Amino acid sequence: MINALADLLDQVPLPAIPAVLLAVFYLAAELGFACHRRFGGTGGGEDETQVLSTALLVLALLLGFTFSMALDRYDERRQLVVQEANDIGTAWLRAGLVPAPHGPALQDALRLYAGLRASSPLPHETARLARAAAQRNEVWRLTAVAQAGLEAPRAVSLVSAVNAVLDTGTQREKAVAARVPGEVMLLLVLFAAVACFLLGYVLDAHGHRHRLASGVLFALMGLTIMLILDLDRPVDGAILVDQSAMVALVAGLAPAAAAGQ
Image 1 (cartoon, one colour):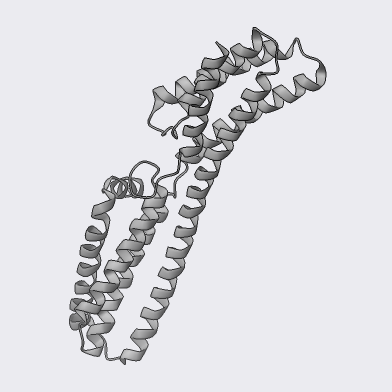
Image 2: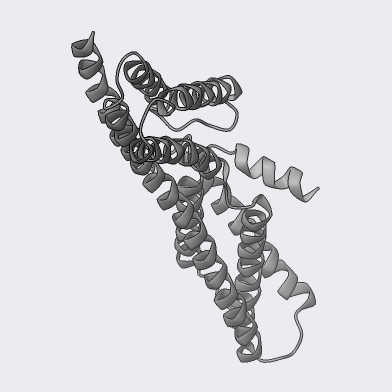
C-alpha cells in the first residue's frame, strides 16, 4: 500500500506538484478548522500553539533532511559524469601507446563506449544498458589482449586506466538509479498535510482563519517539495545533470579517430 502511494506521487508531473499539494494542504487546513469547531476543547490557544510549533519544527527537519539527501544524490551524479569522461579519456590516451593493431582497436572500442555514455543511462532503458555492458566486456577483452604484449609497468598502467572506466561506468548507472526512497517522500507529504491540519485547528482556536497567509505558506511548502523531487528525478524537470563533459569527450575523440585512419 505504501509503495503504491509512493509510486503514485512519482507519476505526478513536476509542474503540477505545487498545485496538487496546495489543494491537499488547503483541504487539510479546512478540515482542521472544522474539527476544532466540532471537537475543540476548552484549553487555551497557547497550549494548542505549542503542539503546532512542535509539528512545524519536525516538518522543517524532515524537509531539510530530504532536501540534503536529494542534493547529495544529484551532486554524485554530476561528479560521476565528469569522472567517467576523464577516465575514458585517460584510458584512450594510454591505449594510444600500445602498438598496432591492438592499441587502435582498443581506442575504437573506447570511442564507441563513450558514444553510448554521452548521456546518463536511465534505469528503464534496458536495451541501452545492455549495449553499454556488452561494450564494457569488449573493452576488457581488447585490454587483456593488448596488455599481454607490453612490459609490466605499461601493462599495469593500461589495465588500471581501463579498470577505472569500467568501475565508474557501473557507479554512474547505480547513481542514476538511486532515488530518495518513496516512503520518505510520502511521509514528508503526509506530515506536511498533518501540520496544515494542526495549523487550521490552531487558527480556529484563535478565532482567525488567515487564509491568504496560510495559502502563501502552503504554496512555499509545495514549491520546496517540488524542488526536492526535481533534484531527485534524473529525467524530467528543470534541474538536470550537466552532460557536457561526456559530450565534449565524444566530440574530441571523433576527429582523433578520423585522423588515425
